[in-house]
Image 1 (tube, rainbow, N blue to C red):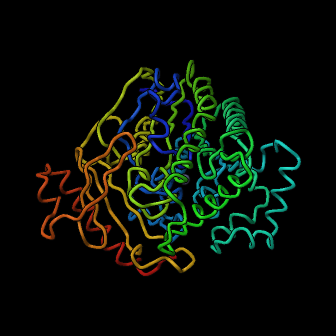
Image 2 (image 1 turned 30 degrees about the vertical axis):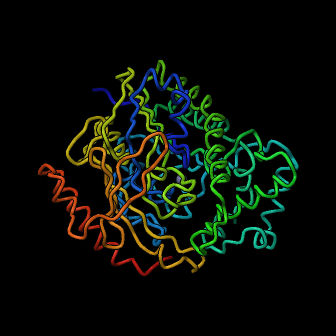
Image 3 (image 1 turned 90 degrees about the horizontal axis):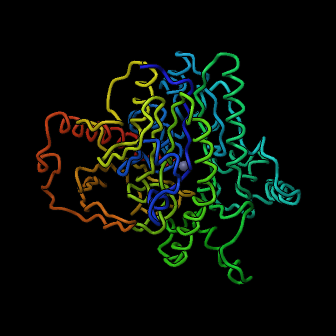
Length: 453
Ligand SMILES: [Zn+2]
């Protein structure tokens, strides 16, 4: 088997599976007709930092240690970029999300990091001026209430606000294409990681930031909804800050954001794949919650809203349409990409079902300005077996059937003596894999439990 010329990994940030698979399908015909799509893939974690690190390492969060608590990708954990570099793929990142850059050490093994907000032209002069004005430290403190190190660090880079104000996917793809062509002209292959932010909060539905509401009162209300959603006020007080119809409105916005970028994705993939020997993976890093199981936005959860992801594999050799329906963890793309590049790897597979590639999901509680209510202070491990979902939360097992079409049955406690690992009658390797995952997660979780930040 020949190696791919280039490896391209495209992430649409926070994009829910059911935002893509609705109205009859994803609407990206080139990918649907020339690649393998996964209809039951789950991310290992529920927000960018741990989820991206899992894709880059093939590991679960308790193994790579990059969580809400540590907020750091350790130097001693090898990543896909470093491994591919040793096989002569130049690792290049083109990202619209600062979380994947040096602020959390996620870009540690990339030779080049191109930040979309730095190279993208602003759509309007007033937009840049507004963004710069809003990003002045004093103004920022007034409007960006969450006093969180991350928010502070992320907004040090003033131009970054552009990402929140306009669509940039076209510019990111143009940059990626240029970099790939430059490297190929020098006789070098590239590993290009692209993160797109249109489908992330505040969900772009047009070329520049646009509200769903048309009236002034409606707009003011929408600002409040956006503020409480990002601030995750629900973790701090039992008020219902955002009513379900407004959460449904945000869900609708993400669906529209997907419609806004899918042609760009389809066209870029066609151009990079049709008569070329490039390997392309398109997916989202994790999903978002719009009231699913009581969660909002994307921290702390192990829901299908937060973990079920769209995933497409465009092989450099096998260019035919396939659909894989088995449960699989998206982090195994790490192993499968190495496989395709002729590099050694041990562990699960993506392209075929094996005993240890079922989805195991983890979340670590989010310390919201030191005010997170006690009832949200727990870490969780969940797994899916067949059409059943199990979660271990604060020492207790809970169960829910797998939902469909975006409706998600709520986890309910099972009998104290019930242990799914015993009761499910699992095969040897699968049982061992889950037992080890649970044991290692539990001791890791105990160690960091009291370090909320
Ligand atoms: Zn993300």
